[in-house]
Length: 549
Image (tube, rainbow, N blue to C red; front, top):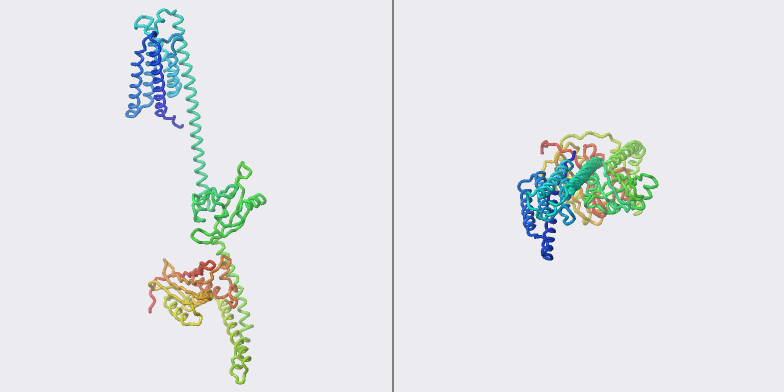
């Protein structure tokens, strides 16, 4: 059961009402005294009014320093009844010459509303008793008549009738006031219970929505965002307060999220599904799977519900599976190529070199033989890549300080033909050692392939930044260029065999890098954007041992 409304604020309203009433009485008394000198003196009223003001001040102090609201209700209503009795005594109250006897039911009504049914009837009885007491006291001659000069001459039945009417009126308003008060209390309790239930349901709904491990967005019929759950905020990297009322198209950046497109797909299919690429505020690109359905609201166009998930990791795993499948196919192909190409290729290359040693050759013949030799060498390198892909993976040989191997490789690269005019190579390393279980030759091959790709991406010149560092339990090799960069689609295919963006590339360099890194139980990631360069980061498990110099 919910507690009844507090008495204190209602008691304050009663005191305010009393002040208004007594002030009105004061103004009437002043007016009557000013316009008519033949009427009975009204000076005693001033004492009664002053006493009422003084009592109100005492009530305020008592409520502040000794707060017992229910007891104060009794005291104030009983005192009000006594004051009303005094007014009736001074001005008359048995006929139509005064209306002050009507204050009895008003005072009883206020007390009944504050104290409810049984206590209201008690106040009605007190009011009747006070009224009857003053009439009987005047009739018996116990007190002078004052305003009740006609009472000694009234018939007994008229006197009793006046008391009876007053008592019935007080009892009636007590019952009505108590009934209304209790009805209002019951309605208030029901409203409070309903409000608590709504609050509980709202909290439960929020907990359920925030516990879903999927992003959830609600939008209005115009495609403007209304709400994003906690998991959705973590995926998108935003807060609901920052994106509320923003268009979905502006947030996620897909024409599929235009209001007309949403309406058409959701109404036609019932549930529209599609994938979009979302870029977080920190620049991270995510693959999102989005489902859109219309909100079930009474309005015809109530809005949309979007449920989305981060598919980036799934896409990455799918990419790894595709790469492994292609690498397996390359391995089978390499076994056949080894038999069908390698021996004839060696013969062709050897014959061309013999012919180049002959004298009396024309310039055109020498140029053609040089082309044969160069292309044979390139084809031989491609064949070696194939053979590496077909070779079974070998476990890393032992703990190696790859920092030393990389320093040697960087020195060779700086002095080799790969670095053209306008290009430079910077190498930075934190304090070693940088030890991991690795094959140093394979680590050098990873670096060479990444460095060549970076230099080829900067035909107009630039700086190739190479950094080796320890980060937690990993060694991190970072190779960053200032080249043309890559788009999202190109990044997804960059490790696939035979995929190359350069005309003379075989598309196997990064595939070999990927395989070597995975064989060393490492990981490789790419961060790139068109016209902003590319950074490739290789992570290898770190080993806390010392390698002899």
